Amino acid sequence: MEKTLTILTIEDEFLIRVGIASYLEDEGFVVLQAENGREGLEMFRKHNPDILLVDLQMPELDGFGVLATVREEAPDTPIIVISGVGILRQAARAVELGAWDFITKPIEDMFIVKHAIKKSWERASLLRENRKYREKRTRRKKEFHENKS
Image (cartoon, rainbow, N blue to C red; front, side):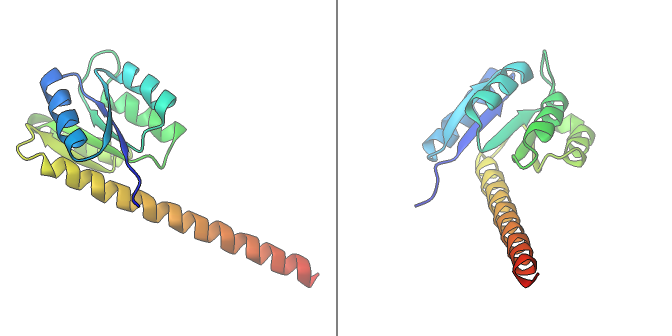
């Protein structure tokens, strides 16, 4: 059985936020909504969602601030940036800062959002598996050397 993913959508534009949330809930995701970066970080810390969808331009705390804080607190959490078409350079900067993907607004096909989430979750799962494998291998090497001595 696959895990039901919890997605935190941080978007100040009400219709976009609600549209994304409605679509994702219909697709079987649990969706949390925040209307600005400050509120989004509070929800992130409280609920520990699996993936974040973050707008770049928001009041109180912008997407870059959210990205920097989440990268510091939970570096393996996938963050997908949502950006207006006119600010692709900012979206590229966000990816350089650690966002896993970006989607341009207006979102013409919500399948793009679902695909980005699926792709990010697969990557996160592979990274976790790889980390577990490396940790197990390191423990075995240590145990081997301790038993050899």
